[in-house]
Amino acid sequence: MLLHHQFVKVAKQESKKIAIIDKTTNKSVTYGKGLIGSLILAKKIGRYKDEFIGVMMPTSAGGALLTIATLMADKIPVMINYSTGAETNILYAQQKCQFKTVITSKVLVDKIGCNVVEGMVFIEDIMKEITIMDKLSSALKSSLPLFLLQRLIANQSEDDTSVILFTSGSEKDPKAVQLTHKNIFSNVRNFGDYIKISRDDKLLANLVFFHVFGLTVNLWAPLCYGMTMVTYANPLDFSTICKIAREERPTIMVGTPSFFWGYLQKSEPGDFSSFRIMVSGADKCPDSLREGYLKMHGVTLLEGYGATETSPVISVNTPEFNRPGSTGRVIPGVMVKIISFETGEECSIGEVGKVMVKGDSVMKGYYRDNELTEEAMEDGWYNTGDMGYLDADGYLWHSGRFKRFVKIGGEMVSLVKVENTLEKYLPTGVSCCVVDISDDTKGSAIVATVNIEVNKADILKKLGQELPNIALPKHFVVIKELPMMSSGKIDFRTVSKIVKDML
Image (cartoon, rainbow, N blue to C red; front, side, top):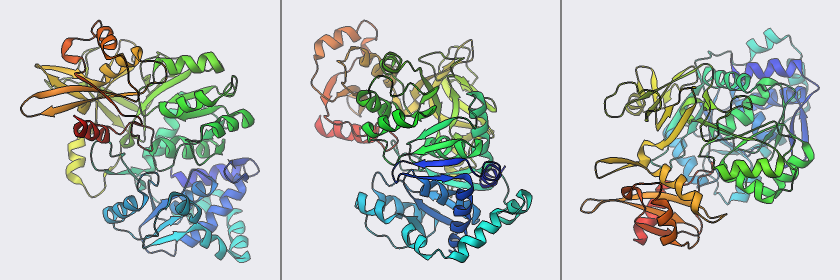
């Protein structure tokens, strides 16, 4: 199924239902009005010659309809990260994908202080061009029978690229990931059916659309199922998110641990009590965070796992099948196998190895980078670059990125395990990140970074009861504000650089 065709189908079935409640602009859009609006925008976008169209919009009704319209115009949206170096990211995307046009909002550009880049088109100017005839012709077009309307709007193949997303670049330069209609739609259906979401759910959409977590779960999932989505442009505005949750009473929300921490700290008891599904992903979910939501709001915070290259969901815990600490069972339609790093053979139950993924949600490949694509794919299996294991009941346990393992004294040490153990003995509210500093003469040294001074001797004594000596941090470094990616992940590259400069 083509994503925009599914939207058209749902919009015609649910024409009077509210599709989007935009809390940034305090405006609501029905599915019927959304269909007309996307058809109008598609006509305007169709005049640009580029095969790719850069989309740099906040999480909003406008951002959602523009993404749909780009597909309707037979173009491929290239989602631009505007939270960290917007101008640099635009130029990088234009060069990588060889296009010119980037549609954005003047309000957004002014707010983030981004310079006007050649090829930039403002949505406000497009809106001013819309005539009564545009509205009438699109309204008439939207009233056509479903089969005819779908044939008239970019009747592509489900194996065609539906979006270009860039990886976070937390470890190396961003890669341009090509996801097809089949990739995203299959992930939406497999994930959605597994956790039992329906048209009656109401989703709080606060994640950015330029990350796969936000694009698939916050944008396409509600539109494909016919839910109402409540959008807000700034996930870091913790107090407002809590207010929206309290007032709108949504039932589904996903996010990163760092965002969920912020909401927990700014919320009042019961603010999140309406949620039946809350899923934390993109990073390890601490036990204390789960306990906080259960205690204050009576809600079980579930954990899931995915990757940009897998559209993204690979595994997730559900209310019925929840094993805290794991990332849940592998969702239907996705296959996972664990391969030994040493032998290349499939691992036994409980044995840590490389996490390999196969299924309809695995990417088409990295755009204009066959070499990287071949490195990532092995006989149809995508190498996630993560380490983990499956237990006897089929739950997947994430052990960290392979690059977050360090070999010391001939042993592989998981920096994530050191991090998780350290978190247990840090005072409440103290953040940490564990990195290794490699040196050609002295070998590797594990360094713990924290945001305030801590009692190192006491903590090392406690860590020594659970970890071998080779896994104990040699240094503790204070970084008052640990650098974060826009996705909510810690920026390990930057942390490592800061530590190297300090030591």
